[in-house]
Every structure is written in structure tokens, then in C-alpha cells.
View (cartoon, rainbow, N blue to C red):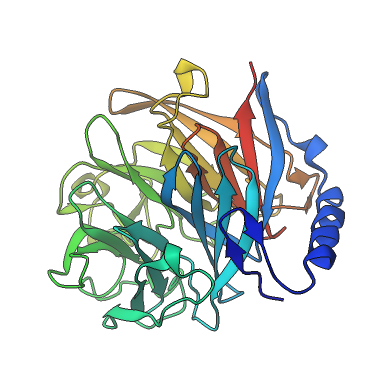
Amino acid sequence: MRAVTLRGITVFPGFLFALISMIAAASELPLERIKLPQGFTIELWARVDNARQMALGQHDGHGGTVFVGSMRAGKVHAVSFGANFKVQGVTLIASGLQLPVGVAYREGSLYVSAVSRILRYDDIERRLDHPPAPVLVTGSLPGDTHHGWKFIAFGPDGKLYVPVGAPCNICDPDPLRHAHILRMNPDGSGLEVYARGVRNSVGFDWQPQTSELWFTDNGRDMLGDDLPPDELNHAPRAGMHFGYPYCHAGDLPDPDFGARRKCAEFTAPAQKLGPHVAALGMRFYTGTMFPPEYRNQIFIAEHGSWNRSKKIGYRVTLVRLQGSKAVAYEPFASGWLQGETAWGRPADVLVLPDGSLLVADDYAGAIYRISYRG
């Protein structure tokens, strides 16, 4: 069923049935199991099929839009919210795409990643009920689906940043085609490599005080439960190399490729994360709702391990910074993993204009909202 949302009013066949279904589904999510620091609360904000990356569209005192990509669902949704930040409706704006994980918003247009392509939907918020045909920004990216889904975002320089993961668990791919972060002009021109030696980044953001890039990177598999750690990296300038496939986490030579180059040649991570936690979306907290000690710090969605005998991750963590140095790594929201059973998997985080924090969960098909009540 496709929802059509007009500002403040949801009008589509079967509205009552959908509303009842949403309420019933909400009751099935055990949010009382989520552990948060004192003063914080969590609620179900929206139901979105296979929710992955989120991007904030236009917003004002009357409300706004959050766009949501997906992976296995092949869909892109728009979540409309009102002045009180309560959801007014969820609209399907694209379907049948190949792994459209990444969404980015700029000057009225929505950009969507689809493996080898970046698509653009113009004037999207005025056309949610009748989405426009997409414009092809570029179709020249590698078509590999192994690590082929792409988190995308516009940087302070106005360029669109697009990672291209390694087409394997561990290999030595063509450095001009894989294992890096690219950037391009909004029209697809001026394509260049910004960072190299990046196995699979599915989340990045720019530090508010410095406009410098920070990104998560997923470590390789099949080296046991505790090696290598995932990484949080800091890339203040173009041209840096972060070690893949020769060195992991700054000090672990790869057993297959490590003899070719030394770890000292590469940039070590700013913070080692848990091994196999699958660190995905990350954002600097730029709001004012949370206490001052959270401002300009990094929240990371940890999707959760698969290549480990005992599961870890399945949570939202916090990396605390002093200037541009990471000084602490700690849980912020946990409870989606109960023993060895997970009922949810955080995939991205996003700060709303009121300072609350959204958390996308592709496993439960949900978006949660974390607020601070004091």
C-alpha cells in the first residue's frame, strides 16, 4: 500500500488499516529493553521498510522531511513530520532500485546511490505524491555488489562524497576503482579520489569546528573473534591512505598482503572500535537538546557482528573527542541484542532540528527517536 502525504493530512486508501497495523507493530518492539543514560528516552518514530541511511530535507517551524534509503527492499521513502516533530506520514518515492542505501539532500533535490549509479530526484518535496523521474548524475561507478552499497553525503565543500568498497573480504583491488572514498561535483563532474585504503565505509560526517572528514570503516573477516577492530578514521585532507589491504587498525599486518608494505606507511585510526561490530552510520551531534558534554561528539550506529562466535554490536555508541583527538569510546544505547538473539540492528543516526536523535533499524523496519528530558 502506498501512502500519499499532503502537508498535515494523510490521504490514501486503507488509512485506518495502516494506522492500526502501525500501532500493533509498535507494541511488538520491546523498547523498554533499550538502556540509555539517565534522562534520555526512546520512542518509535516511524515504521520504514529496511531503513538504512537517513537524510534531512527542508524543514521550518511547520515541519519537514526525512528521506530514508534501504538495502534489500530496493526502496526510498520520505517521512513527513510536523511542527512537534511527530510523524504525519510515510511516502514511498522510489522502488525497484539496486541497493539504494545512500540518500543525500541538496537544494531541493534528493540524491540516491544505486551501486554503479547516483540518481537525482529534483524538486522532490513538492512532488512526494507524484515523484519525478530520476536524473542520472553518474553511471560510471563499479557495479560490484560485494560492498557495493554506498552511504553518500555532501561535504562542506559542496561536493558529493561516495565510498567504493573492496569487492571482496580481502584482496588487492585496482586502487583506481575500489577501496576508497570519492568525491564529485553535484552534476557528477570532477570525480576524484579523496581517501585510499578504505575497505568498506558506510558512514561519515564532518567535524563542525574544523569541517574535516571522519568516517567509519569495517574491518576484514576470518581472522577470529577479536581481530581486527572496526575503525573510526579522521581524514583532514585529501590523499591519505588508511591501510587496506596491507594493514588493519594501524598495527596489524594482513596475513596475506602485509608483507608488501609496512603499517608505518599508513594512517592509523583515530579510534579502534569493537571487532566485527559493523560500524555503519555516524554523525556529529550538532543539537542543543542533549547536555553540553554530548555536543560535537560522535554517535555511531553499530549494526552488529556476524563473523564472530559471540555476537557484539547491535547498539549506538559514543566517541568523545577533545579537539580532534578521540579520548573515549562507550555505549550510548543498547538492548537490541538480548543474549545471542537480536531483535533490532541500528544502521544510521541523524540529528533532528530540535536536537533529538533518530536511529534507523533495518532489521526491525523502524526509526526510533531518542530525546533528553532532564
